[in-house]
Image 1 (cartoon, rainbow, N blue to C red):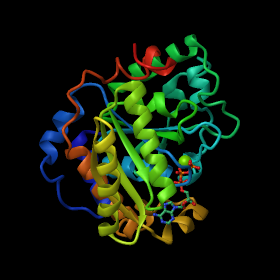
Image 2 (image 1 turned 45 degrees about the vertical axis):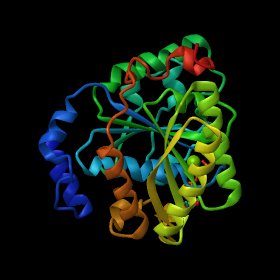
Image 3 (image 1 turned 90 degrees about the vertical axis):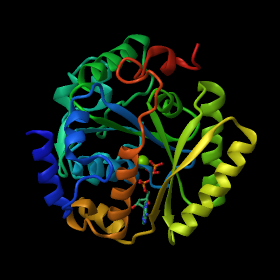
Image 4 (image 1 turned 120 degrees about the vertical axis):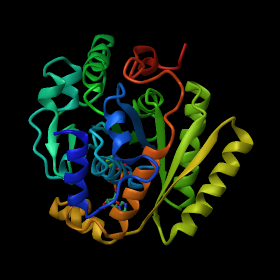
Length: 303
Ligand SMILES: Nc1ncnc2c1ncn2[C@@H]1O[C@H](COP(=O)(O)OP(=O)(O)OP(=O)(O)O)[C@@H](O)[C@H]1O
Ligand SMILES: [Mg+2]
């Protein structure tokens, strides 16, 4: 299917009848063939703030604009993307990086026009990777990156494990928080570590579970004020997502709201965030496929 056809099909799926403001379908076609995928990590300091939902709905929002999207569930031990969309992947990310399964054999199509590389129950994920296995991951993603416009990675929460190096290996980092002070403090900790250990200096902030967007703006203002006071970083506001009681119910059904209720508060807001993400200029840094998950970065601080 061409990018334009996909755009139309997905537009129908979500009830949209416009092209992406500022991009348009012609540019989308070009973008679809422009080179390796843009890689976006969705991460957080505190767990349970809605990272997996933000990653999934951002990915689906981008797919609804005709982007070829791969969502990677890299949340070691707590993977959930397969449950959110009721997919039954036979293989997972861990098997891919251990060279047991080809990436294309592990990827499954999920409703909404996107593809998922999951970490199903029993899959070791990225835990305890050897250097050779990290190389497999780089090779696998390098090989696939030209087939996608956007790769969204749902990382684990916190400052331990692979979440930070994974984030640092991507073109862009979306930090998810909710308005609670503990979540905000942990979001700041993630930003600080990514800056100090990997030199990241640009972040996008998504504020989840807000009463209204004013609350999101205020949370962003507080976090970015502290961050720019103490660190050489720029924290951009990607947007807010409302608290939506429909979301837990959708999880119970295994039917994401972007399919069943695309105009519901969370799904509509997430599509707005996806639109902003796609409209943002891609960082000028020479990243992309060859940079993605390079051994130096997964192994620790950049040399
Ligand atoms: N905006 C929202 N409105 C209502 N419920 C929400 C919202 N965002 C997330 N939730 C609920 O909060 C819970 C945690 O969400 P999610 O799994 O996306 O968080 P997470 O950050 O990925 O968690 P973890 O750190 O464990 O991976 C889920 O039960 C989800 O339904
Ligand atoms: Mg999660």
